[in-house]
Image (cartoon, rainbow, N blue to C red; front, side, top):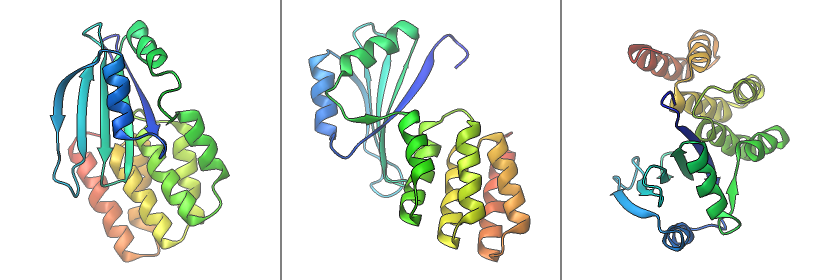
Length: 193
């Protein structure tokens, strides 16, 4: 973010529930400022709270389309570090380092498919390691895994990811995946990526 504020993303492990997030929020005096239920199918549930400094935001997002729950902390250096310290050990969260390690260690298609979505969620800004991992998954993957890579690249719209989608739209062996990649690359190009 260009205004001196930063966004840090964490993915919730299954052992941490929404109720755990609410409990930590209440213990630390994070005020609820917005809640959106979503449509229950594609659009996920979102809750936004503000920390006691009244500038640091904590976003809880249940992204139903991807099947991932994550938290985004938006604030300056001091604000988001304070929130991270308040979380302590009360929430079981995965960081970008955890996500990259798991992505590199993934063996089965199921593990790789989950990692592909997690890579897209955890890195709001383009990340070379994440793109390399998605490229590897695509190059060595089944059609289902290649589709998941396309969906993951579509989620963020990173410039190099859009280039990858354009390449896929010309070279994938599946006509359906070529069309999917072309459609999503075009969507991002129309948005100025």
